[in-house]
Image (cartoon, rainbow, N blue to C red; front, side, top):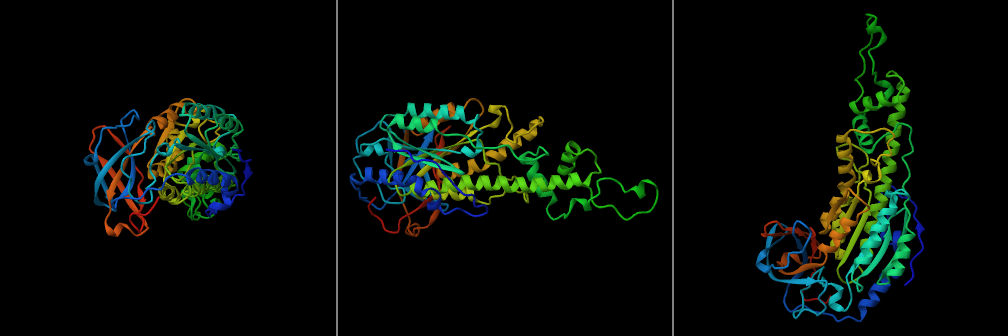
Length: 454
């Protein structure tokens, strides 16, 4: 199959981009090829009124726990317990079809494609806008190693997130994949500004100055008349703490209100730029999930990113609402699990803020939390996980993805009649196994008609 040439996307801040308009040209062959490969596969019908829920259960090292039965799982939908009738272990190495057909539901085709004579399906979604050209090189090497370690029957697609979206169709051709990865480049640029503002400072300044009006109305020093013992009008409130800190670091004089105004203006401009960058990346992931929903079977999406900084306090800019959690719902509809690989900027000697001066350790820790927050939200909601990378380009984290996805359970769950409304319902799966971690999506959409084909 041929890879699709990159297409530059136009930024549309403050609103979600139409999914098809974002990536349909790049992924047209991606979807068509996968559907064609599935078109000759047998259609199963449920023998009982069950829905299928896929669950990974792993130990502390990411190794699948493979000895559990139906009684070991506790499943609730909208907080109400549902009976688990069966628990089928599906392993990547197994090629024989299960002896019993699985139930209906939005994830009813939860079989590994190996069950139908094909391998697993992975999609590497690389957030090129978060990496500089130099920083992305070790990440690409790690991605190449991941592809090389997969089973020959496993299919892999490659997708780069906006502003430079491109795609390579899912394929088992490793030479095509290596060539495509070699052509992926980082596009992040240094924050354009003169005051060396980090994302945390941008958030603090925008939160603390919201509604204060012009900084020139705020007097950072006692009025001259007061110092001279002459009566003067009451002074304005002192500058917010975050603004004072940056002023003391960046301005020539504490009384330079023009410098203070410029800091506030720059913080607002950079906040808008960072918001647009995050929204573009999330729109790209959402559009990818919508198209993956057209492909039968279970998919694993691996997002590689240096982070998507968002606000961690009320009123602070770089605010995207609940976009991250909504991606979990879209992943449920697409029967896709997302692993977010967060490559910490310190791996490359930076702190994610293009800083020219060293920052305090507390500030660095906060920067890491902010840049991984939204990644953690959509990965966890999809049934996957956030995997931080503190050393190298992500080889260890990708090895963990490979280990965790080598086996999973398909649970046959008996729904209530009220579950069958075609709407999104809150799903929770727990196990009593000591030391076990459950990877399960947080949302499920149950078909309105039982025993439907999948």
